[in-house]
Image 1 (cartoon, rainbow over the protein chains, first blue to last red):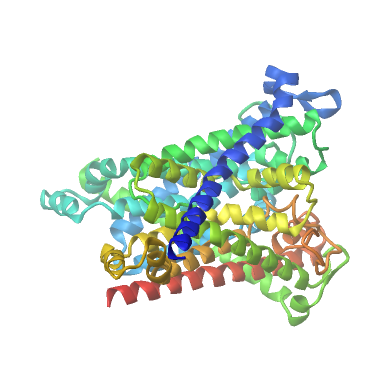
Image 2: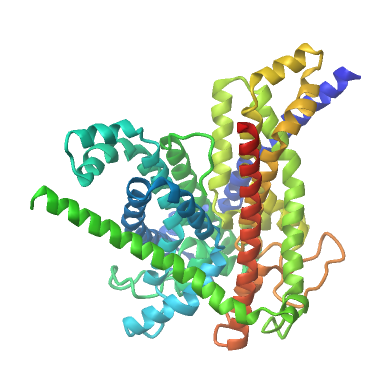
Amino acid sequence: MLGSTNNIGKYYVYGSTLISAFIVFLIFSILLVNSWEAVTTIGLDLFNLNWNPATREFGIWSMLFGTLVVTFIALLIAVPLGVATAIFTSEILPSTYRIVVKSLLELLAGIPSIIFGLIGIAFFSIWIQNIFDLQSGRTILTAGILLSIMILPTIITLTDDAFNNIPSKYRETAKGLGLYKYEIIKEVLLPIAKPDLKGAILLAFGRALGETMAVMLVIGSIDKIPDPIYNWLSPGQTITSKLGREIAETSFGSVHFSAMIFMGLLLFIIVLILTIISQNSLKSNGRLYE
Amino acid sequence: MNRNMKNRLFYISIGLAVTICSLILLFLFGIIIWNGLPAISLDFLTNSSTNFGADGGIVYQIFGSILLILFAALICLPIALGTAIYKSEYLKNEILHKILNTLIYSLNGIPSIIFGIFGLIFFVNLLNMGISWIVGSIILSIMILPTVTLSTYQAINSIPTVYRESSSALGLNKWQVIVQVLLPQGFHGAVTGLLIGIARAIGETAPIMFIATAFSGVELPSSFLEPVSTLPTHILALAQQATNPVALQNAWGASLVLVMLVIIFSISALFIRLRHQSISKS
């Protein structure tokens, strides 16, 4: 009797581990199988400029471009802002207040993305529209700014952890040599924290690529590369916003559906690679960064 | 530029960044509360929505959200518990451990919309379950699986080895040690993980919007295979009719309720974690 419960327990833990491990493969193979039709019938034309299901043109290039530009804008704003704020919380702010800042950041990270979307529609897009005198404020830039706010907590928390993990003897020694705070941070602490910082930015990059709701509501959803290419005040489209807007209206099993899934697969692979690299460069183990 | 000047410039730029971040934080919470509070009343919380959500309350949306996350937690818990026990007590191979870790981190990193697509293809179309709330619960349970697994694993793994050795010396077999010694000590990790996971899952829109929800006209589901309406998808529907001021006000009200729910779950997780930390220290 005792032995049998022991065995049942063993099978239970083996089974649940297999399920957990199997899910990632299941998702990957489902995406692969369903995008196969698009790959075989359309082939390299998938990377064309035009997306028009009526004429059976499924070029994902403008979505890919939109995704990269929006993420680039978000990182351009969030990385300097986040790293500077993290330097403040870990190096300048007295450590008793650190828990307060951390809780505020968790609160900020906990705001659901749909609410960011609502704020984007109600405020940001109207501000952009008025400032730049546009017809519509739903542009690539709006989405980038909104996204930068959403990834800010991730960058601040991880960078703050990275600085906080450095033993204080480095600071004391450097201070004893007569270095200014600026020099301590630039010459001593930054080089030590560099791998963690890299991990933090890569993770934020992955998060930003996969963000859907907020981007979908403010980007304008037009499958075009802006003309000229650096005109970020025109509407665009990202992979996620395209999927969010169109997949429910696409009939299952068609080439159109398959091409959509192909975009999803591409996003899946990019984000997976980023996640794995960043988890390897973040030294502190066993924690999940969201 | 001398060193002192550089140092001062550095302080100024840091101060500027901190001010901007604080203003953003203040702005976000300010407008959520400022716009949300006028919309919230007892009627709003206890009535069903009418006129495609533009009028009326959000009681069925709150119910739908709670239903989804409750079942997501129920589905997730046994699998996460088993995986955590295996990872902590059975798995000795270093390489396998690394592979399992990578898989868990990968699952955690997958963008939420991909889960939605996966659910649409696999459950809704291939398994032919249709748009139903149980599919939403399954997908959300997959999303929170890494969080719950790792939180449980840490709680179980941090129990000192002497507990395992003493109870084995008393003649308990491995499974008895796990059930009677390790689980009571480590279960708080699972609860913390579940609460954190739920706080994240309840606000998710992208994974459930085409597999589990309908935008309007939904009341209580009478079976597992019916759609529900949830707070995030309700906000999405209202946000798209942003020209209607009543609809927009309802959207802000629903947002405030959603944020409150998220905060309640996060704070309970924090309390459980703090309580167990202070016990283990004393």
